Image (cartoon, rainbow, N blue to C red; front, top):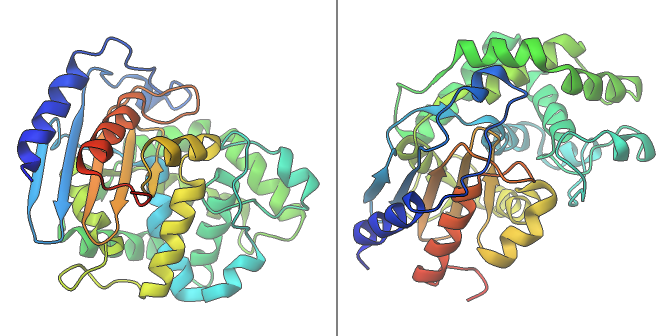
Length: 303
């Protein structure tokens, strides 16, 4: 299969589309990003990496970081993590507080903001924030085989200054005894993890630890890999996760910076970035591009 030709065709198709969504404006550093950018990268199990468009432009991975923190938390706490966070789709916006009120401070899944805060709180236990972020960066760099990956300090500061809703979610969970560290510490660490900057090429490389296969990075046990992929399929796109599974048929995790990490088990890690978002907070063109890619490759897990 000529992946390079396919990616270039998809890039040209996306460039011709007028509706590019809208960038996230509630994080000031994201509001100024050019919405016309589009990049895509595919890292296959046989070691090839193919890219198109703005695939080497760094961006804030935002909620895609939740995949990596979940891997760390499961490695440290195992199934004990599920006493603090659920495994079901939410059906609500990613930053909603509604279910927390009715479910006694237990977030519905680890990929909505409340659940991700619990996961961050779990990997913080017994460690300082700098140590936790250093461990996270070490994990991501090892997965991508790239020591240049870093945290964007400007984005982290922007999130810290405007993250009132996340602070409210954390305070509510703390009131129910579901945070073990001070709210400011957990939220500060969370804001910095979301500010990790990567390009499509780097993100596709980093996602290989979930692909499986003899030559892929063995950073997590296969049993935990399956669980992470299952959650990406059912919860990775917030209240549009069902639609993404219907249209693309592959596990994926989106972020409001415009990135989507998609895993074709046993085949490849795919990263796409376009900063304009749809109404559900997922990359508008990124979602369309991954649908085209999955259709042309017949890589849907349902095929």
